Structure formats: C-alpha cells, structure tokens
Length: 146
Image 1 (cartoon, helix red, strand yellow):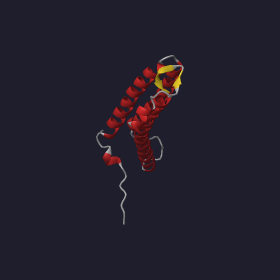
Image 2 (image 1 turned 180 degrees about the vertical axis):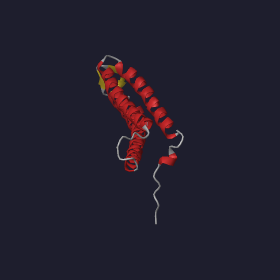
Image 3 (image 1 turned 60 degrees about the vertical axis):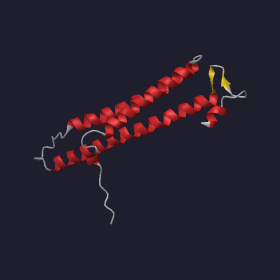
Image 4 (image 1 turned 90 degrees about the vertical axis):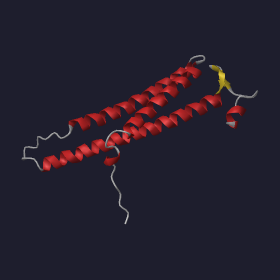
C-alpha cells in the first residue's frame, strides 16, 4: 500500500491522456488485473484440454473396439464443451486486449480500470464455475508415489 501512496506525490509521472491517475498506479492495477485474468484463463483452458484429451482417448478406444468400419463418434458433447471453453478463453483475452485501447482516450484510464476489473471478476467466476462442476475433481489423474 505504501508504494501506491508514494506514487501519487508531487513528482508523479502523469500521462497527458490520463491526468487523474499517475502512470505507475495505472500500470500496477492493469498488471494486477491481467495476472489474475491469465490465472483464471489457464484454469479454464487446462480443463478444456483435459476434456479434449479424454474425448480423444475414448474415441481411440471405441475405434479399437468397433466393428471395423471406423465410424464411431463418442461423446461429441465433451468435444463441444472443450471447444466452447477454448472460445471463452480466446474471447476473454481478446476483450482484455481491445480494452487496452481505452487508454488512448482522454480520461479513459479510469474507465479502462473499471471495465478491466469487471472482466477480471467475470474470468474468476468462469474459473470458479469450471472447478465446481460435477466430476471436475474426479477427472484429475491420480499420481501414485512409491
């Protein structure tokens, strides 16, 4: 907290486009929100990767056990949900990058930080939903140490 207080003194660096906040304060908050968003997106994407991998393994197993025609479609909903999760991560990341453009407008840094905070809350809520779905913890691979 002391750094934030000291970053608003008389010798503060202020951008001409954002006179209401100092540059170090805007940068610190933007970095904070970006890091939290990336952690949340990593949770969502990793879960999607595991679902895709599980789908591929079950697909391969079904093909090995099929009648030889090779026309097997196992769990298409699992594949769709993985693709949907990848799309959510891409949309979140793209939104965050586009929101950076708000800093170009006079006084837009305050709006940028507010919207970035809301986007961060949305990303964390999606990660929370991902980790609290039924069967999430049972899909983890168990590692046995000997």
